[in-house]
Image 1 (tube, rainbow, N blue to C red):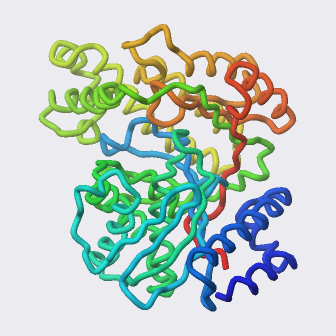
Image 2 (spheres, rainbow, N blue to C red; image 1 turned 180 degrees about the horizontal axis):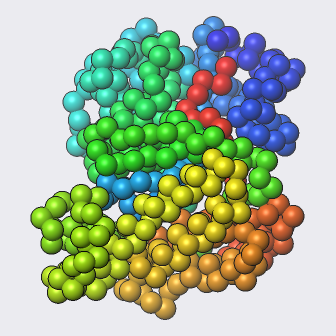
Image 3 (spheres, rainbow, N blue to C red; image 1 turned 90 degrees about the vertical axis):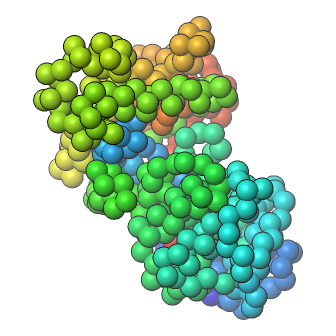
Length: 427
């Protein structure tokens, strides 16, 4: 910790360059971050004045890599943090006021001596801050007031979970300002889910928060959602010769609530045929032996989505095995299999409400034309609209980006990296 002048001098002198290279991975990114973080420090000073105990914190966005639509039926997922993050300059206050200003948004000031949910804060950042503070207290950790100025480059609406990055950022600030950094990334993620569920009014799962908080590649087994099993996957993505691209097809998620709910509902209805709440509780061999009954009681699409669930669970673990063995070619094969299953069986690439609108389908077609035998591609996140994911060989990257952007517009292809850190204090 230092004051703003000291932090900016250290940034400019290169003292923090090695730390920034660890987190942001490239020399170009280091240069960009030095400028960005100096601007955030200046914003803090303009808002709150200088502070001798100022520190910078970061929390990344995340991408789902494997396990498409498995978590809600207590399945397995593979996720990873990405190099787009939310950064804050923050310092303690001597009262119980939390004051936060995200660049481009209004200032938030709340009294965290009141930790009850406020219905008028549902859907607002103020609810997330209050919820994070309440969660820290609920878990037996310390809280206190703080001032923070933040900026995010996690793309909103891209499936990279800007909300989880914000929650984890607030948790990381509380962790280091008031708990000496002793709160585990897993607990920060659980608290973030609690905040989003109870104080933000969104019944989300735990994958987004866990990937942002823990960082790098992680696998999560939701067999017991109250105590998910999380394991970090050791793999050096920077050395694999590929870039991760997220393609924004421009589709709107408006009016898709019923589509998302149907995926979850049909899987659970299939489990109900066997007297269970979720498919994870139904042995696959039992399900396959009773497909006729499931068809009759739940319909054909429920059968297909259930089979997707069983196979996608196995694929998520096969992807982990391939990465652990350093077999990136095998990993890409499984990613493609996952995408085909999402398209054919889970059927979450376009909505049947508007079959003439298939932006994701066209993007997947373009990927297959360019990347077949070289890269990998799949739907990203919930599906039906929004984004796809592609692993593109670096020597094809510019060709890939130009082809995609010729169809979907400038800036529609976002080139990312897998970040090796979750929510952290930078310095």
